[in-house]
Amino acid sequence: MKSGRGDAPSFPPGFLWGAATSAYQVEGSPLADGGGESNWRRFARVSGRVRDAAAVDRACDHYRRWPEDVRLMQALGLNAYRFSVAWARVLPAGTGAVNAAGLDFYERLVDALLAAGIAPCLTLYHWDHPAALDERGGWLNPDSAEWFARYAEVVYAALGDRVALWATLNEPWVVMDAGYLHGTHAPGHRDRAEAPRAAHNLLRAHGAGITALRAAGARNLGIVLNLEPKHPASGSPADRAAAARADAYMNGFFLDALLTGDYPEELPALFGRDWPDFPAADLRRIRQPLDWIGVNYYTRAVVRHDPGAGHLAAATVPQRDALCTETGWEVYPPGLGAVLDRVWRAARPVPVYITENGAAFADPPPAADGRLADPLRVDYLRAHLREVRAALARGVDLRGYFVWSLLDNLEWAEGLGKRFGIVHVDHESQRRTIKASGRFYAERIRAGGDP
Ligand code: FCB
Image (cartoon, rainbow, N blue to C red; front, side, top):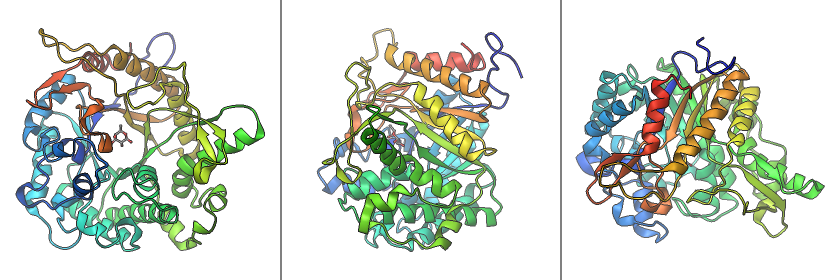
């Protein structure tokens, strides 16, 4: 292995340097060529809880501008791209008839990526699914695991020979918490009894998807989780217990089910009578061998005991003196090292990828010379890449890093205002401009990751 500064090992050969996006956030043209309506398009149209809802059908127009976007990835020197497939393009009603034109779009994209020397890393479910499935109960319907497994088979049959990494789900915790408990994401439900059921069915879908993909001959199968250290606001037993509850709810929920085949013992107490007696056989099927595990890392939370703060009785304490991003998330690079260590301890020898890491800041528009200075994002990336190197030096089998995001895109309910891209997008003209952070990242990649 080439060595970096001092005696710290640098990035291993074959390390994936990527950027990530998701279908709903960048593609636009959701109904083109026979696509069905998605849960998110419907949620944006009817709920009144999505900013810039009028932009949903356009997003970054990636559905039409993908050749330019692949060229951008090449210009940045990426050797991997993480994207997701819109289930409703492929199976407009969720189950049943396949829309070949929808699959064709991803075939063209994957072929262009391969021709550009960029490994296609595909996520099957990044939160958008056919609205028709919500009419059948969405993730509350126990059949959803089967729907997902059949969808996975259809995508694998078309692309299986060309995709480098397969992820079943992106961040099931967010689907549960924002979609079913707090109602800020599709489908917009606010029901404490639904949350554990939706999470359990998402995990069942993951298990059924992995089983179906393996039976079809697939390799390199994993899942993407968002993990966040929960630090107690004080050393008091009450605050420590609050942090432990918050951790069990967000991190342990999925890590434990996937890696140990059980839910954290705190969860039944947290949900009380809303926690169903889940069958042991389900948990056995959820705990499938994984070929890799993906970590999305953005921030940490400092937590204190607060009996009035929902089912967790835990409140997040704002860190007033810390730098926060436009989404209000504290910039806390050491948390990345901590979650990598935790996942590696729990999952080893399964290798780990950082499947998302990045920040929204209020960038200026591109200057007259075509440059765009985003120093806070450059600092964010630099500090987090330092954590990546340190984790490698500690022996974490880390195989890749994906910036969130390639493009300024639709940030779910927040709309267009939160810019996460290393490439600026003018949402009127759809013009793309590589930001200083994009240039910084490209330089790092050229240097093999080392500063
Ligand atoms: C993650 C999502 C991704 C993006 C970032 C900012 O939770 O996976 O789609 O919205 O946050």
